[in-house]
Image (cartoon, rainbow, N blue to C red; front, side):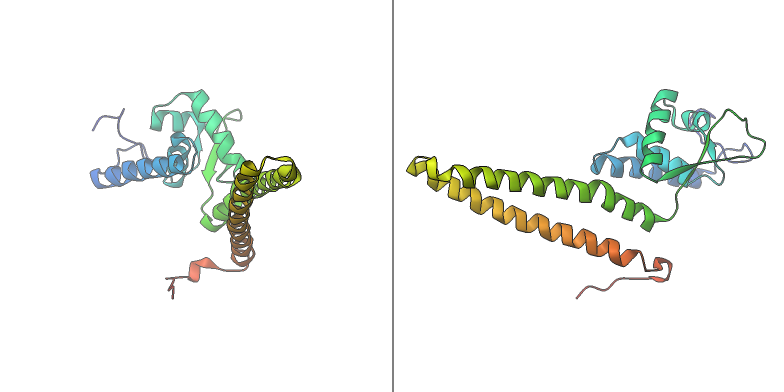
Length: 194
């Protein structure tokens, strides 16, 4: 395996074949997972690089490991830092101008940040849009021709159904966030649903 394709370990050796296979699989999987949730695939790969590194990495380290531009690394690292998935750390003996990062390994904290940030905000935004649309139709329905009043009532019914679903999602998210804050998940070995 050449040094261009292989990831370097802390003491500058190539990873063993089995470790390299798992490393590459994890980076690919985290990239796909990030893409699935609507984020940049590179964000998942950067997080994976940090997660699987025994020591903090600089932007240059990640650029070399993933073979991507420094601008892409920098932009995506800012996003990951804003989401609370990575943090900047000081490294003894490191260049004063070079930024080093570590992955957040408290996955419940990441999950909570994700739910309370983007997901809850999106649910609340959707509820606000639906309520605005419901009011618009409710205020206009009396002025509509009879055939369009029938369609307007259908709209109102469907909007009400969607609002109920989104309010339920909002309740679930808030319930999960309330429960997770007091649980030590390291003791959880399994979940049984009935």
